[in-house]
Image (cartoon, rainbow, N blue to C red; front, side, top):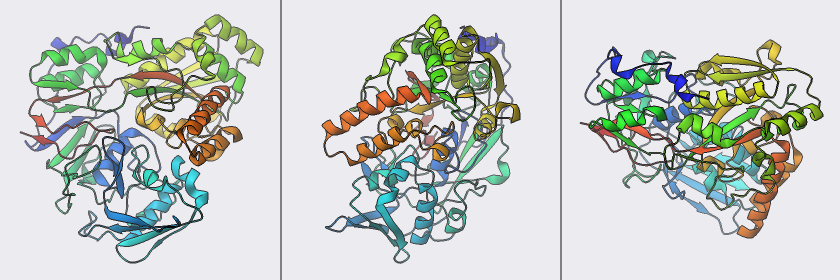
Length: 523
């Protein structure tokens, strides 16, 4: 498949300069990875919403660059000798963007709302008896048994426990919050938000950063910019032109085809800012035909060759990608390929035979692809090509990323606006442990979009939490890899490195497991 068709034949040198506002010198003009359509990082797992969340909200705890959990909004915590009580104490001076003080009641309400959706906390939930506010600055977990992973859950990066005002955190976790009030370093400028085009955040003068230097996502989250302005530019060639002419300052996910052009410009820096590789995911809707049949899901997997997907996104750039034929992040302690033989088949003919044996009857397959998100769109088009070669009844729906994020919540049949296959990406960190891994969760209605249900996967996830030594944890991870590839709720597509690009007058773009804009400056 020719990924350069994504550029639609554009010749960059012939493009007129985009008519984009120059903005103030302390305004960072950003081309984001995708359109921001939801402001609620609990309701959706979309990374673009999480990036918004890291500006607007703060965390009780946070991960440093080594993955260690550090205090963030809290001064610290104390665990009783029996391990059944953990008490957290907030820092002084914390305020929300509306001027109200942050209290322990806000924290407790935020924890309960987040816990309903977070796969990690769902595993720990049976061991938690109560979370209660003791006074304005202290709140306490009472546990049924010791939970050593509690602070890791509260401080994780994949699905952060962001703190909201109690009045907003009281909203049902399955209902979107549309009022983005937090206590983070930037406040959302609601009256300048135009979904599909523009979003703006302004420095929150009332934010008191921690005194420690920034380290990963921990430490001093100092807002050094007056404004952060996102402009959605869906055409990669236009985005590249805006970067090379200086009309934009930062491009989160440049198209790999355009990296040589950007590198030739002395005023543009191209670097790998994210700490982890970006892993591709092909997700099945396990509720609706034909992919309610695991044998049909496995048949499609037999035709997949991860190298085709990775070349479609990242080309042949040296060191730009790597196959990873298992469910855990390659190079991490739990990575293994036990039971991964199906991902190494790489055969259309064998997949066709397996599809016929599984009883595929020509049911329509609706694959929704985001035309404005080049990397995920490229993954989607490779799968579409495979399905056509397998003779499946494919309908390829091209839409924008924001619409896909909304549509993937539908459990309806395809005839009523549902879907069969979607694609997404995830950081390596988010796939490194069973408790983080969104795509491994198999608890039916509570699982990530696609809603697989498998009691054995759930049992193994809990067994990993209870494992008493690394060797036992490794054995559980191998059993999880085998079972996940039998259930085949998603197909792992390997990983690629996704650099970012910024103008040379932008400083402070430190390496982190997520795209954040605190501690960055612009000359």
